[in-house]
Length: 184
Picture 1: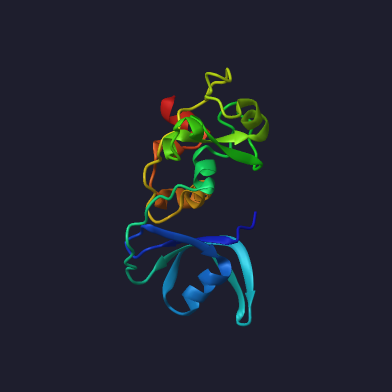
Picture 2: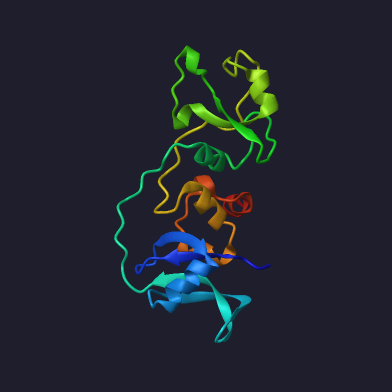
């Protein structure tokens, strides 16, 4: 399977970003980064075929301010693994639901927002889950900080086996097969 994304590591091996193969090749050709791991894919260049990088390490330390985990629709959906927190259906056509409705004083915070399918969101309406006779599959909470990568990008990167050893591990975002291995 051909991947077109490349994991960029800082000089101290901290994950910095995920970029396109084109940007990664530019970093290599400019001498700013060096490949650590190459994929099986071959790229055609004017100087002949070249293997595509999968992981790059910067040659110098990039100093960045500590990013803040932003509350956004994409972050809520990624935290909930694109799964409705009421019925468990997976998909991209999800909405954001306030567990305690705003009109009753429910805040717009990590602890009060969940991913919901349209059907469950309409069924719940502007009631609490108890009033609508619905139950949350998992209590919403603010995720731990993910260094430098946004939450959706971090979760996408976790799906790449060869990248996992360079990514920080957070139990709350462990894939289901990893969770079963750890508990067994």
